[in-house]
Length: 622
Image 1: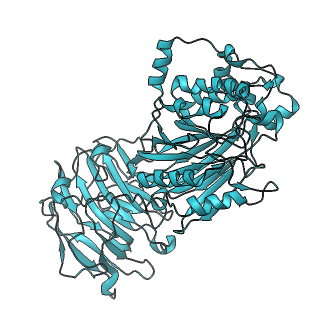
Image 2: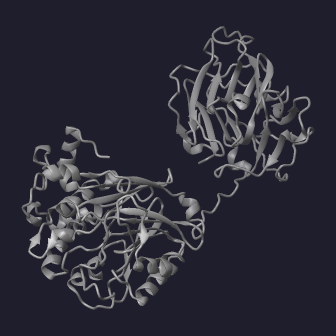
Image 3: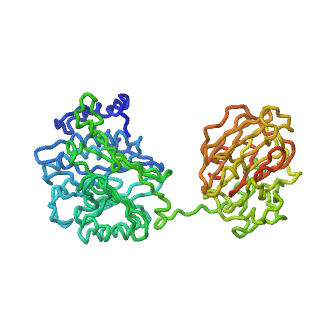
């Protein structure tokens, strides 16, 4: 939500103050209120409108019915101007990639209504912000379909207007249906803008557009689709909307979001298409509210990293006014915060789009590509064993670095043979496409783990110049903090007390990468230059999710990374190297007081140890 503090209000007004729009009441000022720009500067602005096409966060702006602001001799463009200037001012901050108008631009479809509105849209044209429009029933003769011929709407907002737009890709022969392709989150997205009443030919044209772009997710905009009688009800199809669903939406899995205006109040619903996938249907219209909706806009903030679209609805025109200039109704209308106006939608985009644009899995990478300079140990578990096959007691896991730090299996007495098994599960960015599944438990202690040989070179390594420890892991849904907490992913044998470290618990191991009861990651080691342990703490993690952890020391300080991101609780303590008693390293096992205390319950993928600090772009997930 927008803040209501004086400082926040002032910052919102800054873009309006420079254009002469701040504090405007009911007087129509038109574009004359804006400073003139030279042709050269306008061309430069066009070149500089460049949203971040690779960012996983981007915004699609939506503007519903503006008809009461362009009604015969009552022409009031300033709310729409303010909305457009807001989008232009916040373009980079919001990463706005597109703006879609949902129709009923005017009240009567008259030439003298469309002309000032067309001038207002030149604000977007001049700076190159891509947009679409479509005809609503008030923009044309509502008894006609897209074969109606020439109209004032088509004269102002026909295909010729969009010829210079980098996102405009085409129109139906009649000019009333258009499609646009914009790039965001590293892929292309298709937006269809359909007429008030697309003919059979119009629907066939839309089908063909989708067919010719078979891998693009589609946002459909149309003036009429769903409606409700009362605020808060679930949206339902109008008679015409049901036909659009049956003839176009239901059979095209690429359409995941459909937006319409026309009716009020606003509403939403979710329907399953012919493949059983969700299609989100939203109606947006505020023309019934104060000042014809006050130029209300809705921002659809896509965040593919969170699998979420956050939706917010507000009036930039009202936000731009001084607090002491707002009347009673304006104060109530600045933002729409009801559950149909301000909400979030969860879409697991990769899964939702997998039927038409599946993401190719990353192929395995050879072990040689991961044995970079300084690698002292590298273990992976993709040796071709069947999924669920027990690791044999006599089997060795070879150290692929060539340093001789091979691993062998150790089982707790009475543990079944399937307590340690080969698995084909793996992190999507893991070099080796395999893992080990450890079925460990604390009370009673059971399970199996891996350990280095007594003479392995790794046992005596002190890493005095720095190090990087990396591992991939996943915890199962039944992971229990009481039974499974404090298990080690990678740990070193030897009590801190035996190493002469007098600070802290003398029974703790001298080095461990463990999982707390959160579960959260803990890197607790005794550096060479400290008289006790120094600990890095990660945040709590979800189960049934693959994670990558890297612990990096540059010879002075240690930073823990989760999926390439530094955690908060990285101490500033000077930490050089890792104390050693010349004992073994363990994978999946954890000792306390010099005895086995816990065994991992979960999957462990590739593990790599390098004797220097690696940058993030050299991690195994890179």
